[in-house]
Amino acid sequence: LSPNSQFASSASMLAMLSRMASRSGLRVDKNHPRRMQAEDTSLSWMVQVGCASLVISLILTYFVRTLTNSLGHPIVAFLASADSSRSAAAQDLPQPPQPYHYNEFMTWLRQADRRSFANLKWRPEVAEFDIDAAAKGKFGPYLQGPFGEEAISVTKGINKYIFLDDVMLSGQLDVVGAPGTHLYILRRLLEAAEGSSNPVFLDAGCGPGYLLMAWALGTGEGSRAVGIDVDAAVVASARRHLAATGTWDADVVRRPQDTKLEAFVGDALHPDGPAIGLPTGSVDAINLGLAVSSETALEDLAPLAQLLRTGGLLAAPICSPKGEQPSNLPKGKCAGLFEIFQKSDDGSLQRAPGDPDIPTKFIVALKPGETTGGSQGAPPLPESASLRGKR
Image: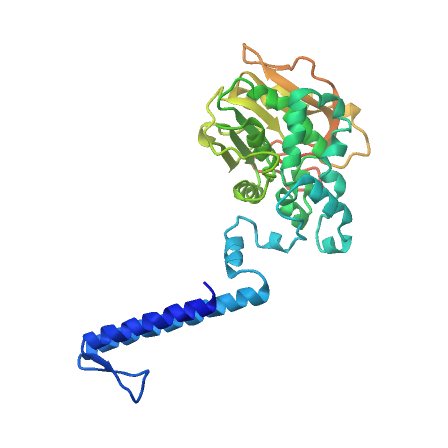
């Protein structure tokens, strides 16, 4: 209703109260129209309180409506934003066009005034969001066929800008995979969902939850995506992103209703399956978001392999031997191959048929007692903890 209509409605209600008052032994003092006299003091007080409450409500309603019109946005929008699963700090980020559409977003990002990102610790780069360019990069030859097309469609349909809000504020880009890596992981792991009515995915080192959403959108109804990360703050960020609205393009992909998206604090290399609802042999596909040594790969991957069903797929970056590492790599990273493993009938992990040798550079998983590989004297990881990491 408009303010004028609400005033008219309220006037009618006041007249009705006056009639009620007269029937109850109350009468309006003609010399003072706003004052009611009563033979019954108690009833008079009750009616006056009711009138006062109505007037206060009317004033507040008029104030809200007036403020809404003057500011150009409703107060309700503020309340909705407070309940929208976005962090308060993220509200200060430069905002792209809404609702999200990949092409419109990319146009906005390319044309954005870079000064608007000046206060961010990581400024969004076009290459980090450009799916078309990533699909033509080093992973391009392996993105052919229906699974590759699905991976491209799904990643274009996800609003990665929202998933990177905390990254832009913190500068920790290593918690998120590069777009080409995401495309390849999805293209390979979506194969494992074929024939499964309730495909299950584990992202070990899930970061802000991007691949969890991608799995749900790519596999459809009844799917489940579980993420684990050693950093409680990153897990909180992932949960927030997975619960948020506007994280995908509804014109391209439809978020299935019967899906479960979850994130837990835990060790990526030693997940507690029962605690996160993943019994032995229940998982169709696993992504490991950090690299392990080629010399100990099968041993390091064994706990994850136990969660895989027979025939399930596991994607993991494997470091080349120490003697083959480039001398100019940053500490904490290694050069190696991105490999896909399949669980065989005897429970062992084998390279998936036709798996190519794709070179990559990734953050290395640290074992208990090892340092982070940063500056001298970096503290060791606590027991049963390993670093998250992508790239």
